[in-house]
Length: 321
Image (cartoon, rainbow, N blue to C red; front, side, top):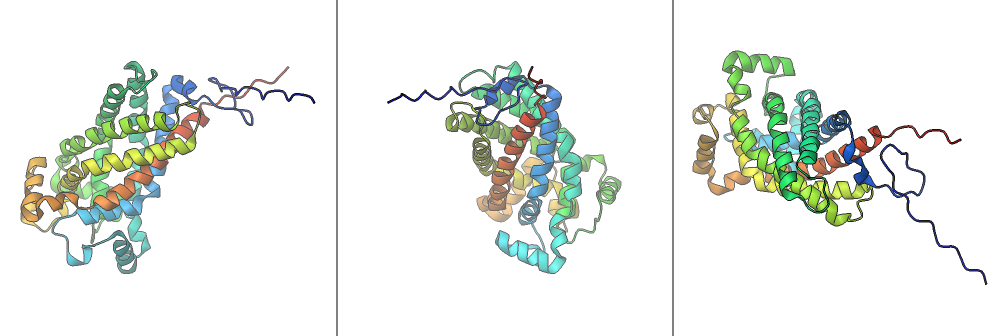
């Protein structure tokens, strides 16, 4: 009886090589990916993420708006989808998406480019769970990315509101600037940072932790990226929902018929208005669609980012001699 030869060992894909069929890929070999690759991958991932789940984001905005008209008050996501589609048409679910597409690409390029750079400089790519490095890199990246994205987010939410008369990004931007000035595009920026800095720090930290727990061998695993990203997004979204409600109040105040809301000036005043009118439950407004937005969108974002980053970094394999 002849003994069977042992199977060949798994081969790790080194930087610049092309994976052959049945080869194991050492994904962590990609820590030296050029910055422009990370930025392009981030841009593509950002557009994919925001566009794919835009209708749920629109519903979240409408559910968070205080003093909304009865026709714009919804008790569930399914009810909102049905009422918006029947009363305004299915296209209304995508109103304002062009603002997201214009802003998300460059903003995510900035975000992921800075994240990878700072994480590498602060030792985040070393073995083990580098919580401090990951949190710092994520928080730093979001400050710069949100500075670019905030005006686009304001325009998006103005267009998302029930009864919005804006039919284009340019018209909305011109009107807001003419009636409220440049400050309107950044009045929510401090609140946005108060929300997104802890959100991003939590999201990136949970993602990196979950990725290493689920995939200790650090082989290329798209399912790991998707599960880790979805879990991280859900955790971060739930933690920061009260801040998101306050941000929505500030960003949509110009469209409100409520005098007190129109005069709201800053995060503290927004919190006070919400608490006075609805108590603590007011800070949970829109939490379900927020989690349902960020869980799949984060899964899609990280899956897309890691995948684009891997594919864009591939180089043609030299012909064998």
